[in-house]
Image (tube, rainbow, N blue to C red; front, side):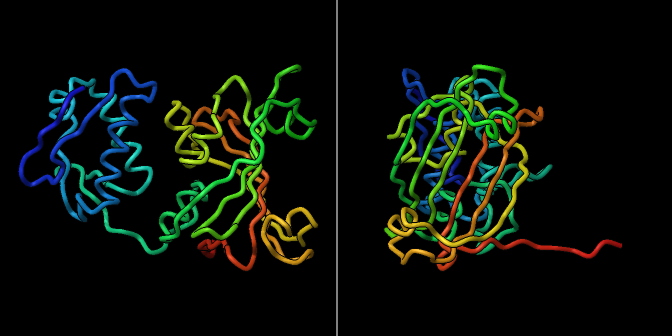
Length: 255
């Protein structure tokens, strides 16, 4: 294990890495910096040491540190500006719609996220899933069904399909971390997605999950997520309680 001591202007006293852990080093580094930000140890405007110095002090490669910084930038926790280095960003009350997980959205909104994994199993894909994910004949998928809570209140029922060749996720990991966070930790980076949002009434099973009467209004979202090379890495079919969740976007007028 190694420790990083930073100049007095940076509140991080030390970073501890477990080199025997299966968790990638860049993810360990990013998570500890994220925890410092969430806990208030690092405040808005605080500057992080440059990646060369961090790499030297921790015995890491520059690409590893760069990946940790990219992860933090992607979560809008820090920003990088030429000539100013990497600084902690201001906490955001609202934000434009972007490719993020409900786990992250609840955290940003100040609601404590929790997850109950209902199913985590390998299955044969339906024709729709096979087509959307462009799977070869015989390819199996991991099917996840999770109930997501915010402040102990059921918010959404999440269904995800992922090719088995990409990643394996334990139920324990899924109950502790956001889905996209775990994909990034495995070296799989969601880049863009296509999604369709609609509405319908709940069936009896969904009503029980959400502790609402049958027929209550639900928002639905069907999303296909791609990596930067354009490969489909996930197909999702989610339902949200319309009384507890809203999707907000900004639209502009074309010239």
